[in-house]
Each structure stands twice: as C-alpha cells, then as structure tokens.
Image (cartoon, rainbow, N blue to C red):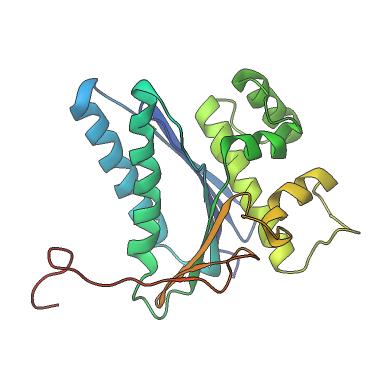
Length: 233
C-alpha cells in the first residue's frame, strides 16, 4: 500500500536529533528535535521527546517489515556518553511497538557503527563529519542539508538498500540504484561467518531474533520481572 511506512532513519544527539521517514509511495518526511535547555533536565527532555516522537511514528500504518536504522554507539567519552541513552530510547520504542502485537508484523532494527555509515555514504570509514555530510548531499540531492537530518536521511537510505536486498530486488550482479559498495556494506552481515559487522534484530510479537547469518537462530528470551509489568497484567 502506498501510504505504508517502510523505513525510518534516526540520528541521535543531545543537542539535535532527527528522524527521516520513507513511505511506499516515495514520500519522505523529516522530523527534527532541538534541545531547549542545558543540563540534566535538557538531556532528559530530549530523551523523552525522541521516545514520544518514535511512539507516534511507529503507531502509524507500517509495512509488514519496517526497517528502522540508527547508529550503534559505543566507546563514547565525556558528554557524548549521554547519547547512548538516546540509542536505547530508539531500541525501547521499537520493542514497545512490536512485542506482543500479533497484527503488527515485524521491525527489522539495524544498528550499523558510525564507520559503516561513513563507508556506505562516502566509501571511506574515516571521513570527517562535515565531509561526510557533503558526500550525503552530493549522492542524494534531495537530502536535507542540516547535519543531523542529513545523517538520518543516510540511515534511512541504508535501510532501503537492505530492504531491496531482502525483497530480492537487487543482488551482487545487479545492484539497481545502489552502488556496488553500498550493496556490500548494507548486506555484509548476511555473508559474515565470524561475528556480524553490525547488529540486525527482528522484533515481532514473539520476541527479538538475530537476523545476521552467524547468529540468525539465536532468540533473546524476554521474561517479565517484578517491576516491569503491572501486577494484574
């Protein structure tokens, strides 16, 4: 259906965050968040605002498999450590929208490291941030020029590339609108015999399942513990 949401890119940051949505009819919608105050309360409000926005987004009409892509943050230092909380807000929102919802379909949650996003957009994993944004805007002229929105757009495109692969619209011999390098990066976990280069998780009413080749039979068992659900649930 043309009005179904098919891919979501989420760029997280305590100063600014952005979400870019892609619909089956080709429409793209950008949502931007900007912190209104400094300090711990400002951080808390950004986390709350991102979660609320994602809750609204994920309650819409979605494709049978919705692709949600956000960067896997690790090794953060100083004030940047706070950004990890935003990554968890994205993961939590996906889990809340899909776990236990039998008629919802599934979300494929993709968590590439920043290096992989840079490889996808520029072909170099050590591209400086400003240069990386320029690469995004040259490759996709329709992308927003604001940094966080441009990166959210690139994350969304990462999801669309993976979706084309999963739907067998592209393969190694015919990568369609994607460059060979973009194809290789977005699908690398399907060929890895070692530890997957990035996390790909399928979330549905049954639980959370690894979608990567090496760990695709793994299932994360989710149990309710005291304090997680109401006593009468």
